[in-house]
Every structure is written in structure tokens, then in C-alpha cells.
Amino acid sequence: MRYSRIAGTGSYLPEKVLTNADLEKLVETSDEWIRARTGIERRHIAAPDETSSALAEHAARRALRAAGMTPADVDFIVVGTTTPDRIFPNTGSLLQQRLGIHGCPAFALETACSGFVYALSMADKFVRLGESRCALVVGVECLSRIVDWTERGTCVLFGDGAGAVVLTPADEPGIIATHLHSDGQYSDLLYFPYGPSQGFDRLRAGETGGIAMRGNDVFKVAVRTLSRLVDETLAKNGIDKHEIDWLVPHQANLRIIQAAAEKLDLPMEKVVVTVQQHGNTSAASIPLAFDTAVRDGRIRRGHLVLMETFGGGFTWGSALVRY
Ligand code: UT7
Image (cartoon, rainbow, N blue to C red; front, side):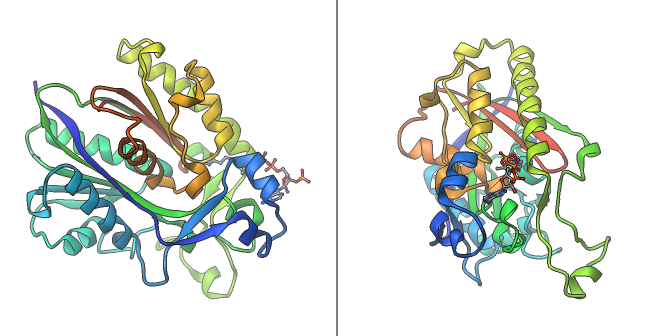
């Protein structure tokens, strides 16, 4: 039996920082409200000439270095992103071009905040089937580009960033299992209102618009769904919740993360929380948090890690990983 394992991790946050105090000058909000309701203290904003593929390149190069590999070794690229550089070419191909490699499959998938877990699941299958020996998996977002900066209910939440892992073949897992889900019936609770086939007419007509979210409704479905997802992941893999060393959740809201930790009986010291540093970076948030905890020595080889995510679609999913 062949498995995949995470050989290296990397992440990148753009230089510019936007604090809660900065936002107080933009919209009717307060540092106190943002911290109390979300846990967020600051977020990073990509420079005007920095695109998602540029952020992804930094994270990818760091992950390759950590894995002791070079771009020339990469034979498969998958990028989860809601904010591609362009409609096409896809961000995977643009990343491939930045890395100076040619010919291997490269693509992007858009499942909002679940983008990284979906991408990890795809790459895992290619490695297991022997079709890849060095798969680059990236989650990246430039959400600052699609936020309505006059809308306090959303603009305080999101940020830009990238995270990556390199998957290589292994005799033992590695990626033990991934569980992916979607339910389109909630598409009006969290969405971006414009797109290529629906049209940009309203935008062209001067209407402002950005990520639209019925936050409180999303919150309730997220907590309920993540609770079921944790049960499913443990049951299908015959794992007792006390065996989990680290929870690496999607970083949207500290209160949602705390609810998931309670469900697992995990003290918060066993949960990787980075949301305060970069806000909700959607597809980038799990690999960013994972890389942070690997590099600061919390997550070590042999640890059992549960990743879980929930986002627009709705889409949700988990990955059970022996690092
Ligand atoms: O990543 C994908 C999944 N996304 C999520 O998981 C996000 C889920 N939702 C959330 O994290 C939370 O619902 C929010 C952080 C978005 C909002 O927190 P909440 O506790 O659900 O607040 P709320 O939406 O019920 O709003 C409470 C009040 C409202 O005022 P009234 O109607 O009670 O007078 C809002 O207008 O807070 C007001 N409010 C704000 N006040 C200050 C909304 N945004 C702000 C703001 N600053 N930025």
C-alpha cells in the first residue's frame, strides 16, 4: 500500500499590516468589538502588484526548501483559491511559470475556505496512485481585493496570505484520510455577487460590492457542521478523540475554533490559533497555521493532526494527518 506524507511546509504573509485601529478610521467599528467577536487583531494586505500566484510562489519555495526539494522535482501542482490572478490561465499554471517548471499538471480549484483541504485530498490521491512523486499543494488568497471596504460586517474579517505543503510517497500514512462535503443550498448565506458568466454589469455600472455574508447564520451552520465533521472523521478512522495531538482548524473566528476544541475535549493549548495574526485568509488559513506550528516546534514528526474547515458553498472537509 502506498501513501502520501507531508515532506515540507511553507507560508507567506504580505508585508503590509492593517490593524484593528487602522480599521477604526475606515468604518464604524472598534478594536474591542473585533477582538471580542472574532479574536482578530490584524490582517496582512498584498501590495498592489502582488497577486495570488506571487504570494503562492513564496509559500511554495519555502515548502520545497523545508522538504529538501527544488522546483525541478515538482510533478503536480494544485492551488486552492477564491481569488485567482485572472479568470484564466489558472493560478496553478501561473505558479508553475513563476517556479520555472514546465509540463507537469497544474490547476486551481475554488471551494472557498475549504480550498486547501480539497487540494490536499486531490494531491494525496495522485501520490497514492503513483502518478506523482512530489506534489505541491497551495492555499492562497488576496481577499483584500474582493472585500467591500465600506462594509464593516465583512471588511474587518478577511486578509491575504498563502500556505503550502509538499507531498511525497511513503510506506505509511501520512495523510490518513480526507473527508470532503458540499451543500449548495446555502449559497445565499456567503458569496461574492459578481462573476464571469453571471456578469459584471452591476459592477461596471458603478455599484460597489464585495464578499456578502449573513454572518450570524453562517456562524450557526459552521459550528453545527464542524461538530458533525469531527464525529465523522473520528468514527470513520476508528480514532478516539483523545488520540489527537493537534487541531489545526480553519481560522475564521476564535469562537468557532473554541467550539470545535470543546467538542474534541482538547485544551486550547492543543489548538493552533493564528487568526489573531492574519484574520480569515480562506483557503490559505490551514496551511498558514500548520506551517506556523511546525516551524515553532509545536507540531513534530509523529504527531496526529486534525485539520477541519468550513466555508462558502457551503463546502467543508477534514484531513487526518500523521505528520
Ligand atoms: O470563513 C468562512 C466562514 N465564515 C465564518 O465562519 C464567519 C462566521 N460568522 C462570524 O464569524 C460572526 O457571525 C461575525 C464575526 C461575522 C459577526 O459576529 P456576530 O456575533 O454573529 O454578530 P452579528 O452579525 O450578530 O452582529 C451583532 C451586532 C450588529 O448590531 P445590532 O444589529 O445588534 O445593533 C451588527 O450591526 O454587531 C454589529 N456589527 C459591528 N459592530 C462593530 C457588525 N459588524 C461590526 C463591526 N464593528 N465590524
